Length: 177
Length: 283
Image (cartoon, rainbow over all chains, first blue to last red; front, side, top):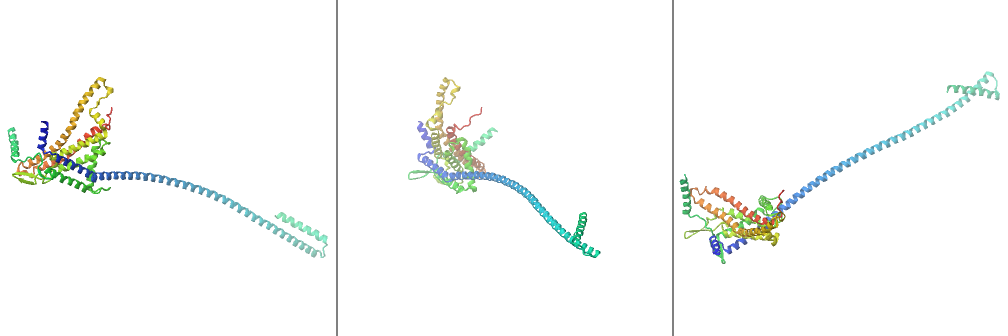
């Protein structure tokens, strides 16, 4: 009786095994084709896009970190360069000062030497001049004395007078200098 | 007042009966090919199946990273359905079950909406005073909805036995789900018989899913066809205006029924495969 009721129900709604199998195969085929040629490629593309976006974000983050590191490195290099420049400047200033001192000392020494040489030369010149003067004075004294006395002086007297004149000249010169 | 209302609805009923616009519950046989019966429901199913493949392929074309407008439509549909199904079916099974479930949704949706196209139920031949129309909505044919229900139950069986195994499934249906530590041995043992009875009811419920899934979809679409036919025949002077809201209703019902069928199959799969992934209740 149950089977009859089911058969009657199936008959009322026109259910037939051939149509049922055809509908099952039809749906399976449509679902497969949809998935194979539309859903699966779309899902793959979505996944690929998400991966690309994630990679892009990661790359951007990485670039940001690299930029920060580069900026930090730049500042560090700049700071180091400034320090090196300061050190170089200090060293140059120090060496300049030292060089200036050495050169000054050398110049002073040279000046001193020149002055000393000039002084010596002047001394020698002075002495020569004095000797010449002495000789001239002695000769003049002799000649003057001889003219005054109207006679030729002996060698002893000449020597004595010469001695007195030189002594007198030396004393005068000594008091002047 | 009440007498007036009865008279009004009585007149409507009489008009429908007199107009004879009720849709046949079974498809008409149009002919046979090699002994295979070609019904108007089968013919229209094939036509719309080809159209589904064509439309979706046309929308998607070759998927690109920068999507076209059609690709956006399909991507949005797929993504939303996937997000909807994942918590129901469970992350473990959703990837494998998704092709079948999205197939159900798109197939049923397009078949439902195609029943609203001009020519469905109106193009045919008149023989001996009987009008035989060539195109019958697929889901207004019980063969189609029963076929979908059978496929869904085969898929359910495949996923359940694949992921839970035979013993796991039997344990899930007939097993004692009480906490042994909280009950005495006597009560716990008695509960075995209770859960055995519950399991038997569950088996009947599982078998009846074939009926419930197929007749729910069939009933809604077939009822919709009847509704539209009757509204059109209600009064000749309103046939271009009055059916319009009901067409919108049928568009809505088309989506809802596609979603209901898909979600129910997802729930059937998830009720066994998604057990361990349910979040534990907070104390």
